[in-house]
Length: 451
Ligand code: ADP
Ligand code: MG
Image (tube, rainbow, N blue to C red; front, side, top):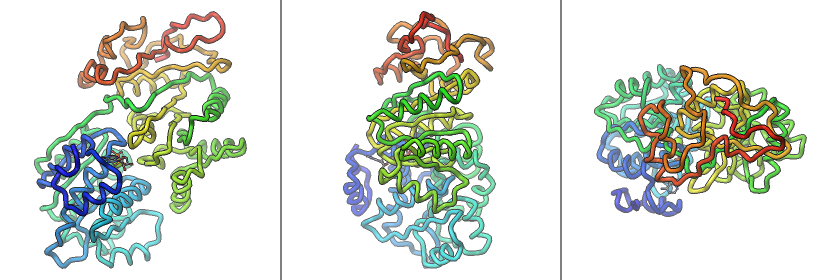
């Protein structure tokens, strides 16, 4: 569907054209008409599918008509979990609002208050903010929400994970009850549903996909690793690949991000760390360098890398597997963006089997295990039942026949969505553990997976 059919203001269409977008993405096709009609929305779609424009274009469409109020407060408020995401949403608002008069201001932690006070005093159309700092300004009486028309909660699930629920509710309570509320989240279940019930009025629910939709543009691979030394060797092997333009390497902790980045830098890579202990200007500089290609390997933690949208990222490497399965989906979504393809590589030791199992259950996809000749894992998957799986071994056993996708014996699907609907559409490779390239030696290759 082209954007022309969406009834957007001509100045918005012009900026879309300049951005080079020809077709609206599925989430945009559904969310934009509903939002233009004034509906509250709770929407989810996988990362990298253009959710920002899905809420920003209808929001800008309102700004295209002058406000009747002579207040100077924001007409649109976007709340984001992190500063990086706020910066991106802010950039998107400027890009899509380039041909109209819309003043966009970003208010996040780590920036000096006097500068922000000045920005806020000058009249704002679109305010993009992280909850904590916004509340600080609200408490000081610096925000006038009297003419607020739209409240957007971007990555609402993440805001809840990060403990912002009270802040979000407080902010919402300070805005006019007549507002339109647009909630975007990776999932719409659980706590999100409860939050939505409190903040949204008769919302239209749009779910383009769940985490179980395959990231068909992202090739997902797995390396079984014995220990940290083995991880380093495999990482070096991957980084030597000339096809790797830029990579984000995820570690479990900020300390590890720093030390791995230092090691890689010392080994001659254009590497740098990104994590929440860095001050905001250092984080911004790092993202800018990444965007300009001055950094090839970014070593990051989940929170800091959340939402990063850099098209050159060809590889995401889970040096440490995420503890929370949803984070896996967010991590790999840093690659394969804007029509590109990407590769996501995860390292898993036998201690990670539960996390691996959780990830595969969430995504409904089995990761393809890869063996690099000379770097074979010594400890092969052997012992144990899948933790928490009640003794079932859903992944164990024989290679499956072709055609059934993952539907066959996976009985733990949350919504029955793991079956043929995806498999047929994607024509994906059927790569399983037993497909791993044979290693030297005579171990049986059809070993049971360690999940
Ligand atoms: P999400 O929030 O769903 O993760 P983003 O809004 O960050 O995704 O968009 C991901 C990328 O896709 C951005 O680089 C954006 O410019 C691009 N994009 C968004 N909408 C379109 C479109 N209709 N056509 C082409 N590219 C698009
Ligand atoms: Mg987004």
